[in-house]
Image (cartoon, rainbow, N blue to C red):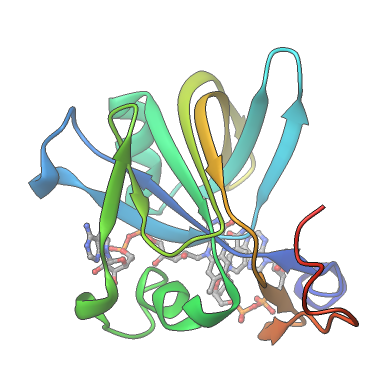
Length: 159
Ligand code: FAD
Ligand code: NAD
């Protein structure tokens, strides 16, 4: 499964949640199982391992943020996967009561509309309540490694 699905290139996100506006309660984790679901209403989903601490936290808070990482944010991705410790790089911006990672390309603030058990993961569908985006190179994940996107025209990052 991992060898096959690792050939589906993805971006990389940090999923975040918090209890109300309590900065002490903020929790984040790296996820690439993120997808756009619906435009009307605007829905996305994240697939979170049942054993991840994040799973119980999203169930409790009913809200989550998705920060789509920029190319230079690989260290943050490793940090929020528990594979490295880079606390000095972690800075949050709050949107609609949800913490999001500074320096990301996209911020989505979501409220959970449904959570579906799916094997050893849970699919949390979220309605997007606020979004923000910038142009720039994304961080990519392919065959278990972080990659950069090669673009012909450096000026043409957005669309
Ligand atoms: P922990 O493992 O306890 O926390 C994750 C890390 O984030 C810890 O180092 C913690 O110190 C740090 N952290 C948390 N909150 C804060 C904070 N407020 N300030 C500073 N640091 C903080 N798993 C999935 O379930 N779904 C996926 O789609 C998925 N995709 C992945 C994609 C990639 C590229 C990688 C590398 C991993 C992916 N994982 C995915 C695995 C997942 O990121 C790890 O298993 C992660 O450790 C699970 O986090 P946790 O909620 O159990 O919390
Ligand atoms: P990898 O080679 O394990 O990942 C390749 C692909 O396999 C991923 O992009 C994903 O599509 C799939 N995958 C991997 N682990 C999975 C899991 N536990 N559940 C569902 N799908 C999974 O990449 P890696 O560098 O060994 O990953 C680092 C760590 O991050 C591993 O512990 C891996 O399990 C975890 N991870 C988890 C998920 C996920 O839960 N959806 C996704 C990617 C990575």
